[in-house]
Image (tube, rainbow, N blue to C red; front, side, top):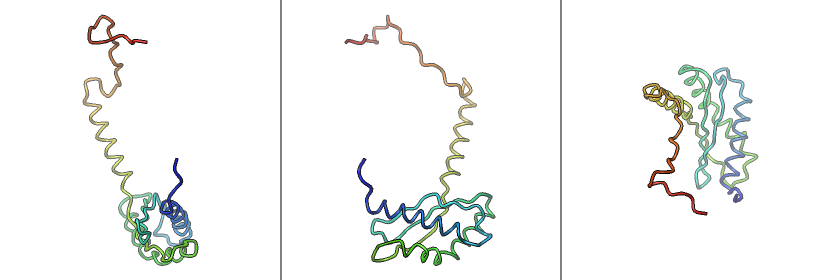
Length: 139
């Protein structure tokens, strides 16, 4: 496996630092928020922190406003540990991958229930040794 690039190392560092800063916030609007991943632009000037929150639409909006309000504080909290000429700008984006995964699983589940075998995984048919299309293994 190749060694991680500078961009990957910096993204990993930023993920830890941003998550730590968010955990340290004393804002009740944050709730059960998790920084799921961090993406860093190729020029190392923009970091996007993806997040999720436990709860519904109301908790999501509250957390979104709290993160927007605390963005400058969080950026200054990771500034001392980032050793780049310029400190990457921070933006937050809601991570909807889990919701998409749940919707896809529901679609697959509905499709399986409508199958003739009701989603059971049938055994593949055994190969017929007398079938001329099947060639025996030559060793």
